[in-house]
Image 1 (spheres, protein in one colour):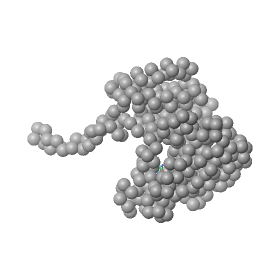
Image 2: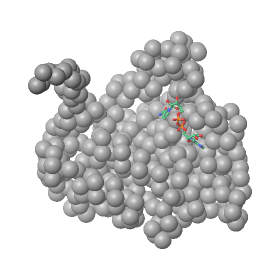
Image 3: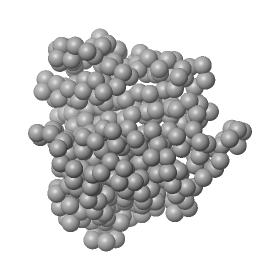
Length: 373
Ligand code: NAD
């Protein structure tokens, strides 16, 4: 991207959202100075903050701001003690999150899972299974498959003199839907270790056969990438047995939902996991939505306890995928690594028995990362 000036909408949301967003913006300001570009950051309320400020989880002004921006940096929304007090369709996750996904056609969800060697103790796998550290990118198709296919219903049926219910979900994918997510995955692999594992269930599902055919065909356009196919049940097992074999995993919607959470568990804490949801690329621009994988963590909100790394790494993804600032993104990722190697640990990744580790708060972790840039 040639422009050196960018507009982003920063929607911190509820719970720990504002605390971790503050640290992400702190880091962005340092990066801006170092690399000499300008990011215009406009903050706006969303979630319960939106309902309290303007009566809606996604206020009109907030949506208008998002439309004018190059991307959205999002915290998280929803408060379990307040959500049940309003109708389902007005609750923050539906009225703000799902609405934004739909509004901006966010069809590709990218979830990098990294376990640095220094955090080996936080991983549920034995150290010998972790190799030199785990580094997997799950690319999940987000707008197709069984979650949206029609018909989708629960109906009463009568058979053999008995009446009972039958639930129907339909798995549907078209060639163009598979092609566009496959391109996202191959391009991501090109910027990494150049291996792509495409996940399907081609031994049982028609969808799996089409998925495998289309991904294989798209793969011919990326001769530098090694493509392999794996059945989803085996992939779930391999993630536990030998996660270091994976670079990029490409999944349809439901398989990606499940496998990305399984992969996430390997990183030890939700507080470490960023995510990106991307829309279509128009010219050089890809509109994206960047958020931590975790929620609003009401149990630790407002106490300077939350790990801001997921939010800060989401910011790095935004620089890479929507603003084309690859070097700046890498600088943030390397600063996070340095802060961890220096022993900084928020409560979620702290173990008293670890030598050299010091327990820090949200703000101190943000300071350590900003200082390491
Ligand atoms: P959660 O992710 O908020 O919390 C689960 C556990 O992980 C908690 O113990 C929490 O303290 C911990 N955790 C999460 N992020 C952390 C961080 N950055 N640092 C340290 N620890 C962290 O999930 P939940 O408790 O099931 O949900 C709480 C609320 O968040 C609900 O209202 C839910 O609907 C909402 N939610 C929102 C999103 C989103 O906005 N995308 C996603 C998930 C949940």
